[in-house]
Amino acid sequence: MKRSEAVLARLQGARKAYGKVVALEGVDLALHFGELLALLGPNGAGKTTAIALLLGLIRADAGQVSLFGMDPQRIQARRNIGVMLQNAALPATLRVGELIRLTSSYYPAPRTLHESAQLAGVGDLLRRPYAKLSGGQQRRVQFALALCGRPRLLFLDEPTVGMDIEARRKVWAAIRHLIAEGCSIVLTTHYLEEAEALADRVCVMARGKVVSEGSVDALRARVSLKRVRCMTRLEPSFVRQWPEVVEADLDNGHLSISTDTAEALVRRLLDADAGLSALEVRAAGLSEAFTELTRDAGEASTDQREAA
Amino acid sequence: MDTIRPLILSESASAPMPIGRVARAYLQETRSECLRYLRTPSFLLPTLLFPSVFYLMFGIFLGHSNGADAPRYLLAAYSTFGVMAPGLFGFGVSLAAERESGLLMLKRALPMPPAAYLLGKMAMAMIVATMIACLLLAMALFLAHVPLSGAQIARLLVTEIFGVLPFCALGLLVGTLIKGAGAPGLINLVYLPMAFLSGLWFPLSIMPKVLQQIAPALPSFHLNQLAQSAVGLGQTSPLPHVLALLAFTVGFLLLAMRRLRRYG
Image 1 (tube, rainbow over the protein chains, first blue to last red):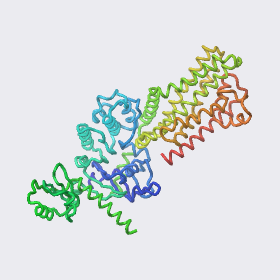
Image 2 (image 1 turned 90 degrees about the vertical axis):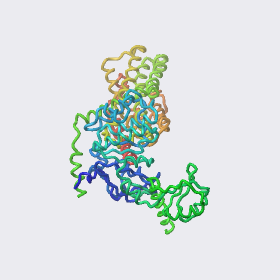
Image 3 (image 1 turned 120 degrees about the vertical axis):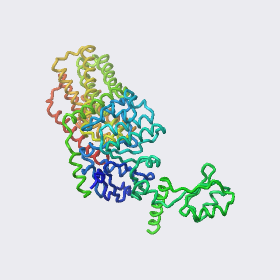
Image 4 (image 1 turned 135 degrees about the horizontal axis):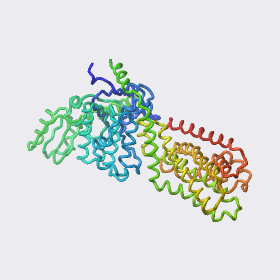
């Protein structure tokens, strides 16, 4: 058995409801050694609940949750993890260096202050009070707190929200560095390019369920959609009535169409507009794959409601 | 096979953290909590100014018109009034704010020893209580010239420094009941009537009989009795009051823990 098959954290048949709202409906999820798992899904899909279960912040109504083979509410389990949550206001009057030193003190073998600060790109901010930092700088400080304990598993919830492109690239570089060190990462993100750039495995959630799990390539391949782009006088509203068309929009003066039968669509397009130009057919990106997967899940649950 | 592997991993994962490092976590948490509030003038200034200004006005400028023992009586009463604040506000307002802002959630996800969180805030409240007691004692000794023996000074200090604890527990409980910006208002609704009803502003003896009977149900009444006897004005034995305060502390703490465990 390969080392990469070792499971660091796992949800088995996890179910969680808040009153009548079911947030997770029997989710299975395993996080393996050395991988970056991206958790994607629209708001309300259950990503945050899944993470909260793995961190021991809430208890599952049914099913098993384990972190390093233990109950995540045990502090021994959590000494192996680093955490960056989406909304956490840190004490405003503490300086960056003090915050890092405090968080490091929770761990058995943390990095040095200097090393944590360098990795997260906050080396020049150590003496600044947290409240005086910009939103992007505060995010980087939170990233420093997540990695300062030399965790074996890192939870990053929307880590690059509010960062400019350069800062985002720096965080990506740091994430790759951590993975090279043998750290495993669970990442939730709204930026598909972030998942595409970093993830070994992508898990798509919708309506409290895992609707797809696999490599980025496998996820793309699972989706039959192709993207057809061209310059044409045809209106999106007209094209949308064709059976081959899943979605059609104007994009920079180009007509952009999602379809699962590209050949038939192209034939019909050329018939309808002989003057059509700049024709382009592409395989779906993660973005199309994501749209299709979560749309299917939506339709499935509508069907259920109709049947019931 | 998958079920075996996590067990192997967990062995190295659960290697105990050295005691020295655990102690460091407690120290760092305490240090951060103290620094954080000592750097927040909107917390520290009212907490220090209210009891000292009251004492200056009613205990010193107007004190002697109320009888020879007034500055002595009010030293104990306003010290008690003063140390209630860091407990109630330090715990209540900060817990309510931290539950709202997500900081408590982050700390619960991190491997912070849960007791360090409470001990850090407790230490902060006790340090501020020390500052208040010292401030009022200095005013009593050098402005009002209240004759106090060394033993009386020491006993008042110890009473007030540990006397902050039941109010920490009460603050914790209030902090679990309310989130965010509503907390200071609610805590004032607890704080000010409690101070009045325990005879911290006017002696209980001049108040209606009904109010005199309610007073022993309040922790501040018992702390005031202990403080009065520390400065040489009490006739009662301190033990029942110490036990009452202990019971309040444990009771509030248990209720707060139950709520925190349930609702986070």
